[in-house]
Length: 398
Image 1: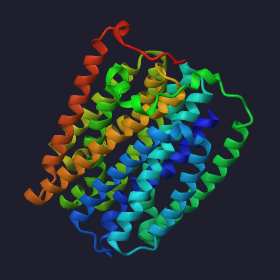
Image 2 (image 1 turned 180 degrees about the horizontal axis):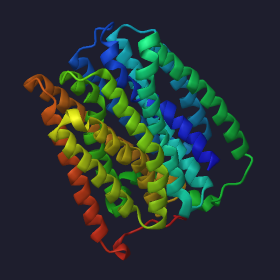
Image 3 (image 1 turned 30 degrees about the horizontal axis):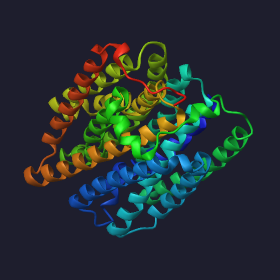
Image 4 (image 1 turned 60 degrees about the vertical axis):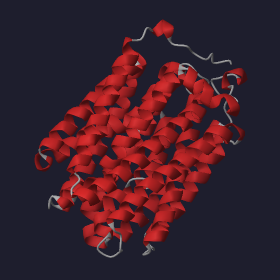
């Protein structure tokens, strides 16, 4: 569990800060930086495409690069980029830095999946991966605290600097942990670490039910969660609600995700991954329906549903894939899942920006987000009804 905890800290930095701190701070940054609605839409789309590019690169060549080096390199790069955000005033340069942060985050998570898969038993893999992925939830919670406590007293620039200092500390912890892990034998033998040839990766995903399901769900996750997260503070501001409400919403999302990652990972390992997915998808859908009905009263509830679903889902999906594939192949397939997630996120953010400018409101965006989550529930029901014996699986030794 110590390994999962340290990698959870990495998720705080790479995803919690690297991907989502900007969305939490942007209403405050706009007071001193000329960031328009189209800048926000472009940043959302470009960061998702960058996340896509990083994941795609990792999927095809990640097996040729040491995962340990990838985690440390991306961690150090993220720390530098987070600090640079406190010094920037140009929307163009800010966009470039956020694009680099997104690519670094996707590569970091793929490498973490491979390391945990290689050093953990299959029956505990989802628990460890979900615990690690819930680190992003801690980042959300810290983002909310930065808004509530740091920004009013010290300004938004200090928030980026604090995130960078935290990132440097995490890099040191990670370096120490990986140094010890490299001295120990992995749980898998060498044959169990087989990879899928790059030329066969996409065809394997299309052929294998579990992998295809994970990729389709990842697309819908990007399409729904990225607009939800990137535009939430703007939507609350549009409704003339206090900025502190956004802080409370992100804090609740983070706190929920901290516990949801451990609990749902345990459910996935003890019952089934489909059951765990149904629980978190239904929870998010119900909270979204309430939020669409009355954003003023149910914004915090939407944060709860988001935290319940978004943070553990990546560990559950990776653990499900790991049951049928080697750790290296799992990293490759999860990387393609990140690609489809990026495509969905880019499409969702661009659509949100178009709707915002065309209608002057984001209400329709959150209705569409709710429909996407309902579709994920339907897909999970389909996979649950399929006979387990009919699932084609790739042997761990292939």
